[in-house]
Structures are given as C-alpha cells and as structure tokens.
Image (cartoon, rainbow, N blue to C red; front, side):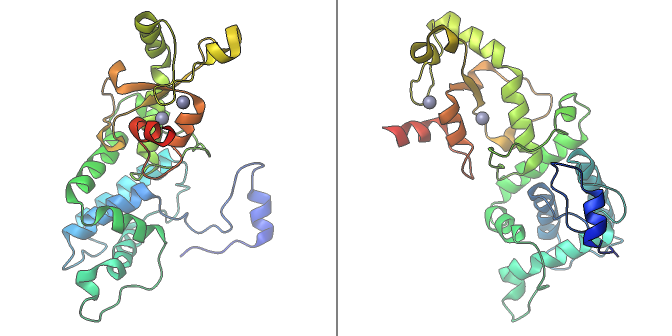
Amino acid sequence: MALKATSKETTVQAKQGEPQPKSQSNPPWTTDELILALDLYLRHRNSLPDKNHPEVQALSQLLGEIGKTLGLNKGGSFRNENGVYMKLSNFRRWDPKYVENGRTGLAKGNKNEKVVWDEFADASPKLAIAVAAIRNAIESPSPEAKALTGADEPEIMEAEEGKILTRLHRYRERALVKAKKKDVLQKQGCLRCEACGFNFAEVYGQTGEGIIDVHHTKPVHSLKPGEKTKLSELALLCSNCHRVIHSKRPWLSVEQVRALIS
Ligand SMILES: [Zn+2]
Ligand SMILES: [Zn+2]
C-alpha cells in the first residue's frame, strides 16, 4: 500500500528542474506498459489470471525492468503482481465483450488505458509486433539498450508504441547523421530537406553548411535492437519539417509533410 507524502516531504525530495510526482505512489503506467498488459489481458479475456499466475509474475518482472530503463522504478511496490492484476481488471471497462451483459469494470484507471485499447485491441498484428519490439528492446543485450535510459524530449510526441521505441527511434536517427550527410553530399552535392527542399547553405551561406536533420523513416514498431540501419531508411529534413513529423500521434510520413506544403 502506497503512503501519500505530505506536500512538505515532496518539496524536500524534489530535485530542481525535474518534475516530481506529487506523492510517493507509483507513477502512472506508460503506454509501453499498457501495451504489454493489454496483450496479456486479451489472451486471458474470458478468465483473468490471478496475481500468482506465472504470466502475471513474468509481466511484473518485465515492467520492473522497463521502469528501471525509464527511470520510473524506485523500488517498493512498483508494478508488483497485485498492480499487474489490477491493471488487467482496469481494461475490463473498455472491453465491449465484458460490458455487453451489463457488467462494468473497475471505475478507476488511467485515461491512457482507453487510448491504448482503441489503438491496439482490435489490431492484433499491430499489437503483436509492438509487444515483440518493446520486449526485444528491453531484453536484448545490445549496447543500444543503454541509449534508452536517456530523458524524454519535450518537442517529440511519443510514438503510439510508447517511450521505449520512441527513444530507440531517436537514437537510430542520431547515430548515423554523419554517414548519411556524407553519402548525400557525395551523390547530390548539397543537403536539401526531402520534404520542403530547404537548403541551409543556400539561405545562411557558409554558416549553414552541413546543417540538416536526419529522420528514421521505418515504422517504430519494426525497429529491432542491434539491427543495422540502412542509409536508405534515413531521410534528410530541415528542423521545421522534422518537428512537424514528430508533432502528431501517429507520426507523419515524409510524404505527408510534403503534401501539407504543396
Ligand atoms: Zn523542410
Ligand atoms: Zn525523426
């Protein structure tokens, strides 16, 4: 049982510049975690497993790892078996099969449950791929896993598949910036935004030379840890177009941004 911290305690614990939860209760479930829980829920929809079920225990452990990676797991009751079981019960209220006979699920829950339900419950291939990709990113011993422990970027809208795969995407696009720019310079002689045609060197002269963003065009859920990114999977974008791509959920494609401009 989580104890509520008084506001005084919270102030003492809060580090400057870091948003802190108001109490010591566990942080809200992230999209990644809800996707994994939804997968378990749907596989046991008719009869939910109790907290001693091996799959509930296994998910609790995996969520503990994800929580460490994301910096959310401060120990204690973080995503323990009981918490996982409760979350499965929370999904019931969004399940048309459960509520059709006048039954209602638990009234309380987090609003993201409905978002995840709507995006994944009826899309089993999409759910399976997202589950495998999140699992892979956490369980693989690839050095990329270290890159996942960074912080969220405020200007980047989290992908539908959650924080882990968003971070993997951003890591992948940064890792090959130099190689991609060099390749395009050799082939085309200049660096131009593939969506709007903007060329920093044309507008800002020498100072703008070499400035351009690199964006990973592969769907986030298809990212596998350790997998080699091909230069052809990367697109050059000016900072405006790149920002527009990541501003909506789901992220836009380069073609969609191009269409917006024309
Ligand atoms: Zn552009
Ligand atoms: Zn990008």
